[in-house]
Image (tube, rainbow, N blue to C red; front, side, top):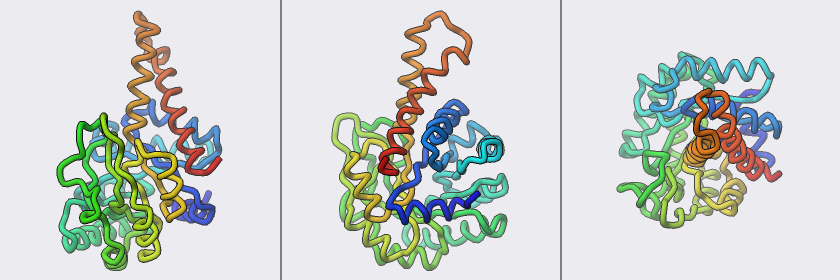
Length: 288
């Protein structure tokens, strides 16, 4: 089977993007896998520090590895938004395919210094692991938002500078870069989501020469997604939409079966809701 880096490269050549979907449990994992399998498209599973603390770091790695081996299917696992070098080491040792060191809130020089350490730690454990760096703070939670979080870089002055991005990639040695280009974690309840700076994405891609990762994809318009992919985005993160689908499915199922107590009879509706979201996004990202 092709490596994750090769699969991302193949997506780049086709002006497509790999869907990255976060999970908090095996229910979401099952739904995402079923959707990707139905469309026969590669997929990345993400677990943040909080999500993998809930699931278990090694358990998450084993679940994804088992699906890949049993079905010979390109499903991969990323340690999303990792804020410490200790957690980078933990994920690499557990067998994750990729890790994200999130230094987005650090000052530029400090971010370079710490991300470089993260690359060295991860690559010493597994030379094949992909290491992603992040530039710019885009909010910290995949939730429904009343307003844009304080300090989030959604306006021109706080967005990632292409020249700084080039230096960041060169000095850290990261395989992937997650820039701040107008994207935001979470979905605003009563306001439109910020628009992406498509020209900036293009310039960052040209300046760095590495695949770009778009975080905070939930709630963006189809038009922005397609323009971002054309501009050079190769991986797109979706989390809040998955969580909303999970809740919608659970509420629908419990309303339809108020006396049911058997989990495997309650959960299929939630699995179906999540799978529909994933299929919709994967089709869009791959222009199907």
